[in-house]
Amino acid sequence: MLGKTAGGIFWMFRYLERSENTARLVDAGFRIALTRSATAEKEWESVVATAGVRDAYIERHGQFEASAVIDFLLRDRTNSSSVLSVIAEARDNGRMVRTALTREVWEAVNECWMTLNETLSRPVRDRDLPSVLAAIRQQSALVRGALHGTMLRNEIFDFARLGTFLERADNTARILDVKYYVLLPSLSLVGSTIDNVQWETILRSVSAYQSYRWVTRGDPNPRDIAHFLILDRRLPRSLAFCYAKINDNLGYLETDHGHRPHSHTMADSCFHRFRNRSIDEVLDEGLHEFLSGFIADNQALGAQIERDYRFHE
Image 1 (cartoon, helix red, strand yellow):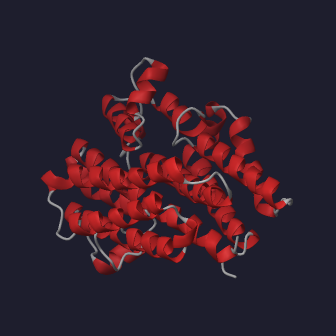
Image 2 (image 1 turned 90 degrees about the horizontal axis):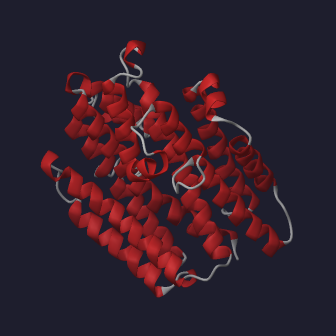
């Protein structure tokens, strides 16, 4: 397969995953701001910073008001990471690699683009935000369903999965990092009722609340939630699960191509940290420090995959 085709598939599914993840990040900010309305501006600032677009936002708006942040992250075409922007990029990449996709996958991507363009054609009112965010998540899920239901399990599928899980791991780490970015005004609140409510909100933002209750059968607490979202390989959005799948798909590519480029070694090294660490070791290191290091390593892996498989040739 040509590197350009591999890159188009990889980025198409990164962008699709990013649209859903941005919706989840906005949902996390919205829920957390509701629990602490007195400091809502700080909560929205943390969401923008976590999305990696703080400087671009300040240039355009300045103040971190809910309506402005929501519009910037969902609708603003000058923001290359907004939902409208990344859905357009996903469709453009899909059109470029149209012959590598089944009809069902292409139609799902095109339908996703048309639906979200209509849904986000107007500013989103607070009362409509939950349904709009649900629509974004649903459209992404429909494309994934078409991928799993109709595509051959070949290198095209492998690059689609690599894009999905690299982006998903980045998102889970960033949403977790919101917790310790500007979330708590005082260490005295750690373990308090408000702290536990905010951890529950983080679980809901990655659709893991019910799963967490099934696994722990207890009330949410920070240590168990951190373990669940970082180390539990049963949860489809945990860091460990994402890297297990990344390693699997890189392994399939190694079998198909008969060689093992440097990105495979990097991915194995990242996965190793999840196989041989306890959550207590992570927390002792510092959750923010652990997540920051992981985000940097995850970005480096994505760049190395692009070089190894010559996406730009």
